[in-house]
Length: 457
Image (cartoon, rainbow, N blue to C red):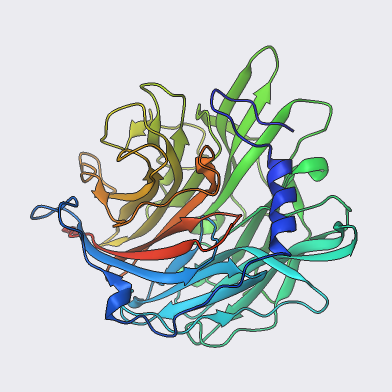
């Protein structure tokens, strides 16, 4: 369906079609084996600097050129705060790079394995299990039957037990043989308790004629997958669409699936919606509206104490534009807080690609880290910004910290939602940002290290 908004946007169907046509004509990219000193970009003179106790920008590292990425592109080992894994797509393949020193340097890019007969890889996501013993990479595959129609598409999951050095043959988590089917988004999650480390959840978005959000789960570390559940299906008879599904796992089988939803009757309504499961994803309740968002991007996480956290963007060309945060303190997650604006710039800018992660902070508490892109420095000049807080009543969010030293321009200047970002928390927080989905020429993929400087009680 065509997306209708105050600012011109493409339909998800059109985006998917362009994506797969471009993937087969991808321009070659090169990868640095190990970033040298010249790859690390120090904070530029005049760039925002942190004060004592505020987060600090430790510089950027180039991860790839001519690459695209999604919103779940980087993960930290919860048991080893120096270990990070990042994933991205380039030349029709999916790649992984690893760091064992909290993002200072990164190992050579390695290609993730593809299932037999698959031609194109896309929208990779990465997740570390709660016990730190296994890291997962999920990504789409596509098999063409002629004239760029689909013979088969789906999502596969590979895993590594040596920190991302070697990867298993991928197992198929879901597949679709509709000739118009495409997967434009994949997200992973797992419970946040070590005793449930073998559980992993996957949610995928298939737009167009097969417009749906689908969910599957594994209880054995990704070796086998359950029957696919359709969490949302939009019939072609109505003017509606869904975007950017996110998934989060908590304690005792708690799972939430979150997405942005648009419905047009006499006027268009935009909402963030959530569905909750309390039995490891076996059954989901009805979807609950959380907030009005007027755009397409959401990210979700569940903290150690069971509080659910959501960030989302609003772009209405007015005073309410920004990055917003809301939370729900306990299951069934039917009551949500009033939204809190996380951006501290003036109104009137555009905001995209919010990403939230939750990490341990002291005894029994959680820390929240959020990263996004906006154009406050100039029209169509997008930079990555970061904020964080201890997840405790009365604790403030830190002032926005600009972590990108060079602005990123989207593929099409008017389409800011072609940008993507992600953040993971370890010895340092490490954010990743760059181009999403499409790539004309050389588009750099960046990783930025941040010193959170939090006092965890």
